[in-house]
Image (cartoon, rainbow, N blue to C red; front, side):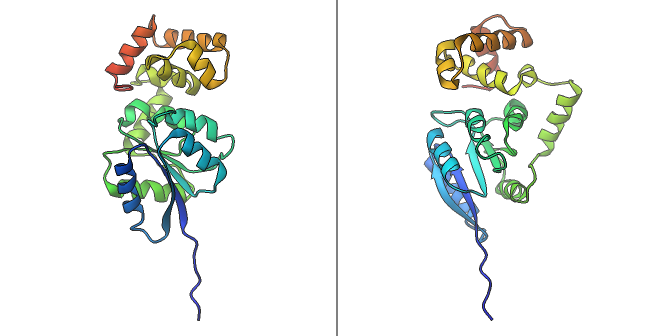
Length: 216
């Protein structure tokens, strides 16, 4: 009797560090039901591969050279709303996780996670569920309660996206061009962010972002 062949689950790894991609590839390919079908080292490459090919899951670095993880999520979700996307980040959960989950990520883990957690997270996504660690679950609970949240967690997805760009030193005009919005719209978002965070200037936003480990 012939043995029925099962198609392997195709995984895309998007990270700008070749050594890290190689390590993740080696980890995933220990599992015979998975294959790393592609790699991307820039945000543009990741978007192109995500749009043009079919993937069972994507492992996406939050800090690509040309686009942030939140930018990539916003651009891919209209095309692939159900694609499982696991965010890999060097930043602790309390800095980005809630905002990235709002933006459309289906899981978030830090790059110092043990290999077993990466495998557990990916299996959870491939089973059609979101991966929420205990720490992220507590952050989400705090988000609902409104207690104990950092100021940036009170921002909407779009506000957080624009906050990160301003804090990184980008001008209103540059952000408007990147997001295909008017400068007036970006200025309105900037004013809303400053009001919500009780800050008064771009320098304050940058200082807050550095102090809280949102940028380096």
